[in-house]
Structures are given as C-alpha cells and as structure tokens.
Length: 178
Image (tube, rainbow, N blue to C red):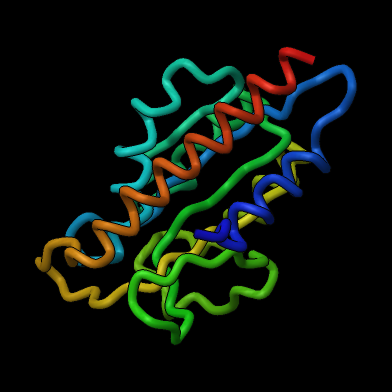
C-alpha cells in the first residue's frame, strides 16, 4: 500500500520547521462539534491520538471541540513551530477522504460549526506564535445534529490517528538520535 499524500506533506512540513538545533514542536488541534455526527472527526482523532503520542517528545494534542480559540494560551505556552488542525471538511470527495489542505484556501464563516472558522484560527496562531499551520481535512458522510460519528469516518479517524502518531513519534525519535 502506498503512503497517503497527506503523510508525505506532513513529513515535508516537519522538515521545513526542523533546524540543526531544534526538533519541531508540534501541536495537533482536533476541531469539531461532538453533537454533529461526522463533524466530530477532529475531536475523536485527538482523543484517539493522545495516548498514542504520550511518550513522544515535543507533541501536544488538543481536543479543541467547537471552540479552538479557547486554547490560545495553552498553545502560546507550548510554543509550537508547527500546528496541525484536524477537522471535518466539505471537500466534495468520497466520505472518509483525508486530504492535506492549505488553510489559506478555506473561506467563509457560514459553513463552519465552530465559533471561529479554521482560517481565522490559523491566522491567529501564525500571528501569535510564528508557527507554520496546516489543515488535515476529513470528508464527512453526514453532520446531522444528534447523529453519531458514521462508521466509515470512525474507521478513517482511527487509521489516521495511528498513522499520524507513527510519523510524529518516528520523526522525533529519528531527529533525537541524530
């Protein structure tokens, strides 16, 4: 099986923020609304990812829910040089598609179930911390109020969390071992 394009993009982004003196400090924001079906993909990914990266150096995972702006102080104190936002995204793809997205291409307020759209959050994080920001989008099947996470999105969230943990932990370990 070939490596998903988002994994390649993640490694490239980590390489860009890594210096000879410092490993990247990575904050992963799981964003979503827990009562809106597949819109919860980002927060379920964060919940799944947290124990998988517990021993990994320089990784902070935040279950940011529908109000990620509430975690600005936590992120400033952590001082990441790379932030990965994970959120359900209407990409008009097959449900459960995972894609690396440029946050600057995300527009509008109306399509978001969050108090602050990802584009404004990313801009805020860049201004406050000087970090590089990326967005990992997961195509929802449905986002009906009160619906659970669909089984197809649940499966891709679990697979993506494991793959993300593998990349982040192996990257940190390889860099710390020289």
